[in-house]
Length: 408
Image (cartoon, rainbow, N blue to C red; front, side, top):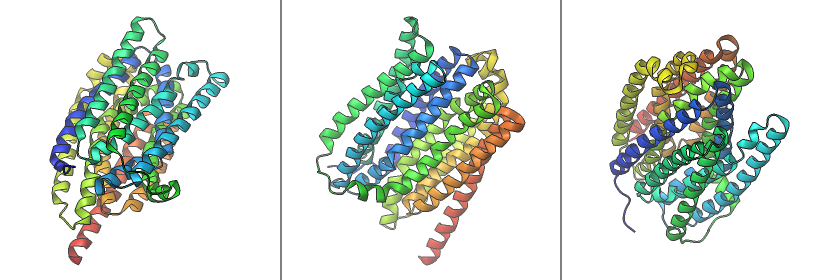
């Protein structure tokens, strides 16, 4: 097999692809928000947040493990074990999600029955993304970008088509994303079948022993998606709708640095293993954070016009909420990238611990902020948690690398 493409080549592909994907996801959320009242959108956003946490929770860190293992050794049988575990966990996730939504529909509101297709969306996306880490680790970022963009675009087209057929908006949205995810999973499985031929070489127990620190970091990071649930429970559905407009509609803006962190992880791992300088990677981090900061600043200024135009005047109270979250996003971008550098250098336990502590502080802060200031208080807590996490990881990174230079 050919050697993986240079870091900057993958960086460029992922950057371009994720920017388009973020725009497509934002468009998708805008379309569903325009067809729902703020309270209904808040409810759907809460379910999507819970589903995202469930995706990460059941993954057990296998996705990140697969990326690193494949990048280090393409003939590793551990990759086959990881992918087989992913198949089983995806099936389990579908069953659990179907049961939870059906139970919520019977006990709370019939609207949850309309969300049943999300059970296939949540497992289909996780299955596809984990499998295509193989392509990414092999240096072919185009496969991942193509799969993601087609999935996002297909969901929008299907959603609009179902609306034309007068399908209820919630059911139309959930069905469209589910079909797109299943198609993405089908493609990913065919790809893996052709490229992963080495049989399994480790047990599930050995796999989980190596992957759990990555799992803890991912779960802690994704647990922030419970912020809408907390806000809704304390401040009510309407405030949750305004807050979710900030939390969910700005989340696509975090896709770019989060995705680029997957480029840094194997690159930092190889640099650490061969005692190479990580200065080029650090420069890439600085450039990306600077670019994202400028983008967030522009959006901050445009929000008073963009929100009423995109979502309607009913969402005008969400303007200051979104602006507060935008202030914290440069720090969130730095967190995802610096965390990957630290993981690549072997500090995975530090990253996991920091993520856990700051997520707990975030959710507690969101609860307290919701009590005193509703959606605005929750937004302040979210942005503050990003600043805190960034400070801890940046300080740790500087200390570790200063120590390494002295030892060298």
